[in-house]
Image (cartoon, rainbow, N blue to C red; front, side, top):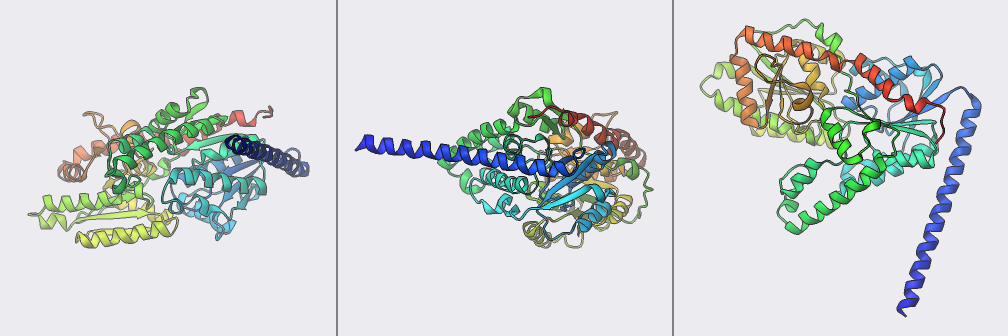
Length: 480
């Protein structure tokens, strides 16, 4: 009886593998045929597909996308750019107008085609309360398959970090593939936090308190990291946005010969030319970033609460201080997070000292840069920090988290070359803000000048040069 069950099970498994193989072969042939028909319309055109399901979000990742598109259009006159997006409610004109309004980036619409994806919900984190990383990764493969079937490109670029789509487009879609990594899907820090049973937005209390659940999560993370490294290696060119991200990708994917550090584009040239206009009766602290959990906006409110505590005998000075939090919301979860932040502001009695501005225009953001004097950024292990660089270019004195990109690439705190401040908790943030407020005008101006002098290496021009250099292998004539 046992052997009968064993043979039947093996037979079913073999049949499944054969059926899967035949299905993938048929899909590959179908995609080749479709690609040939698309290419037959104009044999000189190269179709470049860019996978960016949230292209209308208005964050730093979208600045990378539109700068990359602009660079491709300027370099190659024989390409057609296909942007795979899940923003089905937004027309192409609406998306491109937002790119112009938010980032001051104008795109030639004639060579851009939008392919709308209906299954973006498969990559939403809230769809997977457990095993979120795996769920989103499998979901990205389903979304990628939809994109591939709707328009198989010649060259495929993932600009949002969906590494599991890379082997799909390379081996099934017969495409040249590359990627731009903003943040590794998994990192050694994530694994360490779980092992040390530290609470975070992706390591909840019920897991932290239970040793068995912690062991399961550690095992799951280790297995996922191995799979992540396998799919990542299928990319023919890999761009990373910072030293921190580069260290993790080299550790996980182990392909240094095709890994390139390409700092994200920051609008430093125009911002550096801004004329600062400040009210002596107002001290504005500016925060720029998307309303996402990892940005840790509550720490900013806690820092303000700590600042008020330290100024409890100086009510006049406290009344001058105002925190303006500028951010973009992608979906309902982000708007709910914003509402929670507003409630926390009231709970801490900070409603008169904190203001939220959502999805602001490029012009309005420039006005805020001109009026603010201090910048704040609180994300732990921020992969880079475009908002940090832009604040520094505008002449704001930056206080950022002592980790990730700000620590390794952007902010220098050594005496004689200081261009900003680093902090790890609310008390340190408050202390640094007070140090800036009570510092001499000459001392603060020295820090501002050092900051402005340090940001040219993060300019849009530098990004475009390094981006185009990194994707050269995708434009050679060799076939996969």
